[in-house]
Length: 352
Image (cartoon, rainbow, N blue to C red; front, side, top):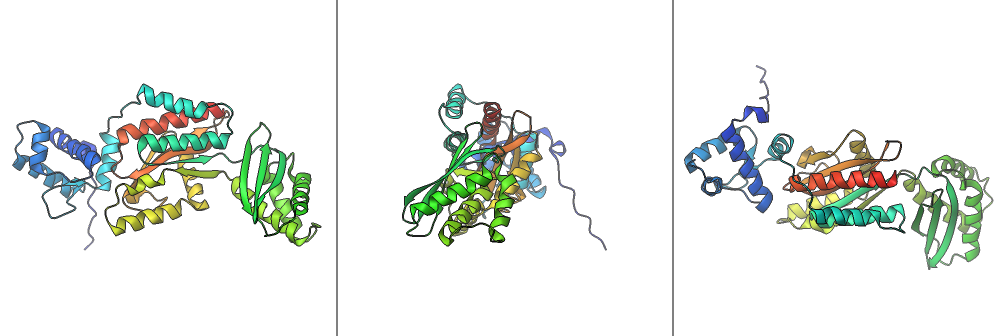
């Protein structure tokens, strides 16, 4: 006998009373992170509905997969599916305060900073305003290079300075062999200037790699290591960069060792290039803000976390990056969604 999977409910399947009760349960969960019982909910509703009537409605919502009891108590809280249904069908978006708008405008429009510095500032501000981890994918470097230089920082460390057409400057710190002479940094600079200046990183990268692999490059062993270290860094730069700030906010709701392990796994995922690629894929398929809740979030495949992300576009209206926040599933979606949307639109206008 073949068992038919029960169809998941939609908001249209809930009557007015069930919607109202469900809304208050979600609101309470977003505020406290705790389940709510029928008696508390009865007082919160301020209506003539008895706790017994509310319990019956809550039981129906639980059977529909919208609520769950995390403990043996009578309290209920929304499931990840319930939160998704609420955000898609019942959420009433708030608006940013004038102070918040002014803060975002000021941070993004600050004069005298490079694009990466502006994006870092916007990410940190988003994190502070939302009390979540802020993230942004920086645009890939698709402009031609104007200058490249290696600068000695100290034993085993060097700074790579990339200057692009249009004035964008990017600095990357790389590891180099201990005791590296200044002459090797100069030779590495001259070698790459001759091959990269006037071309994009993507255009010239393959040629330099082939030249190194075929031993056609007349470089000593130390200089070769400097060039290879630079290439490893720039190959990441050519595809953009992922900037994350405020990860410590993700620890605010940690109450058990399993929660801590989940957050550690998330931190590790945020360090990978695959995560950057998936974030860009999510942005590319969106016209506006996208919301991923809990295990639905294939980017990290983790229950207990949500992500709100929106793309931003260049002057040709092409999506070149994305901005968003990551936090617990009990995000204040009504506040975070317009905040992310406003920031993404502002960044798009500024880079356009």
